[in-house]
Amino acid sequence: MVCGETQLRSFLICDHSVKFVGLTATFLHADDDGLLAEIDLGIYSVSALLKVVYKFTDRCYIHLQYRSGRIIEARFRAKDPQKSLESVAGEFCNELLDQRLREIVNRESAPVRNLVLAHALSRTSLASLPLEATVLTPELPPNQSGV
Amino acid sequence: MTSGLNRSFRDLTSFQTNSYSLLPIRFLWLDSDRYIVTNLAGNHQLLARDQLDDLVNHRIIPHSTLYDDLKANHFLADTDSTVYQDLLAAKFRSRQARTSEFTALHLFVVTLRCDHSCQYCQVSRVSQDRVAYDMTPEIANRAIDLMFRSPSPCLKVEFQGGEPLLNFELVRHVVNEVTRRNDGRDIQFVIASNLSMLTDEILDFCTDNRVFFSTSLDGPADLHNRNRPRPDRDSYSRAVAGIQRIRDHLGSDAVSALMTSTAESLQQPEAIIDEYVKLGFESIFLRYISPYGFAAKTATRIGYETDQFIEFFKRGLQHIILLNDRGVRMREVYSTLLLQRILTPYATGYVDLQSPSGIGISVLAYNYDGDVYASDEGRMLAEMGDKTFRLGTVENSYEELFLDNDLLPAVFDTMLEGLPGCCDCALLPFCGSDPVFHHRTQGDIVGHRPTSAFCKRNMEVMRHLIRLLEDDPHSAAVLRSWI
Picture (cartoon, each protein chain N blue to C red):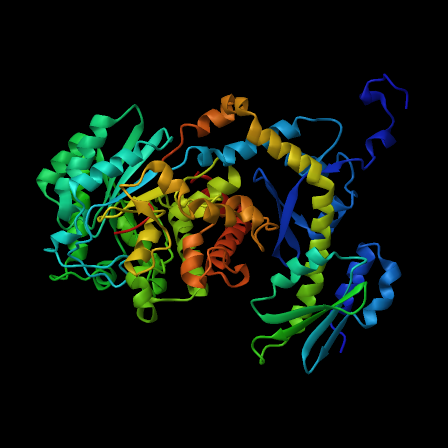
């Protein structure tokens, strides 16, 4: 059975990776041993994949291995054998898409992020700005505990 | 394009280039077709999936409403303005301001003795005549020495127990000594008390020294008395009488109340909130039960699942909003803390919602026996035999307490910016790190986010608040009025 094919096609189109469309037929398989996903490292990085599969570790046992230099296989097995992996397949596709976008944002905005953080943490003169002057006379923390 | 002309005279196409730069953002799905997008300053905006895709792929039409909104929120930048760097930096510094002011809250556990035997009590209870469980003046003096080493311009001294009024002589000693030694700080005193031992003498002292009270009120009398048994089964009536006496002596704002929710509480959020209204309180903290002390030992009897708490919270919040509609002044404290983080650039002092974590650097707990803990929950764990968060004793120097143990590595290791599951989460600017909770519930200070009750609870509560702010203008107006 091929799962999440519609979502996969959608991602291929919006990710401008139509040249990999041939993978749709084999991207996701469900069999007696759970769900097997094939991830093309030409599209996703290993770190993006690791972040995505981490989100499923509440519901699944997950094993990753290289099938080739470019393809990683991710094997999902439900912790609860009674639970279907169908929703996992769909969510996995969407999470991969999200992580791909995050990588673009992180890569493109890294210089600005580093500059802003360096600016924020090094220039003590900013403390005299009115915005921060308000913070320097803060409310005290609320009570933390009962009795 | 002719150079030198005012940009107003350029032709239309010059305004339609997509040459904006992406600024650092995080995003997270809110529901089936919307994403929450935030930046490191805590600005937030909802985007449809295709809008998010357009933003990242530089397809937003310049000077469209969406473009201008994204620019105003510092999610993108163009050549029209470069002040975004200064603004983002200033806002980020504002949100982190408390980090440099650290250790504002100092908890003095003046005794472990208590006249109540509450089901969920967070520390071991002992009988009233066990003097061995009282803090001594010598220990208190050393704790005061340490407290004044804090760089914070504001200090809050909170007396904890057991029941602190059972060792009121020490409370009196600490208040007098701290007042005498005050080097110009803004100092507040709060006694966390069940109020059953309140006397006129105590009230007179507290009036003279502006010592406030925080008490426990779990709801209507039957619920309160079942949760908080004492020999005469009169905990509720004593608490209510104490609240009134404090108000009469010190003023209406001199006493606050905290509730602890047990499984039985979850069935009746409206009744609990109405009880607070009846007693004249204008806020209520719908609190999750802490997995420490007797709350952990009796978990099967009083415990509940996170999902049940979230339902309780949502029901309670809805009821409070309806009360506001009827002109009743009431706000929910946890929502208010989160709304301050979501809607303003300012930091909040709640220890559980900070990154770096508030342990040690926002709070120190001085136990009755002289041990010093990185948080109140840390000393509760110690009463269960787990001293992971013990920093040392009051005999240690300030430097030894902060540097000669695993505190700073723990704070560093649990910063959200470096945690799996958190580092990409759009709710990071509003959330916090709770290493004690994760150590207790998952055996690891970092914890496993996909199965973390802390993460699930906070994400669901924040998503709920953001949906109300975005989709329900009426509720949004009420929520905004709380900050």
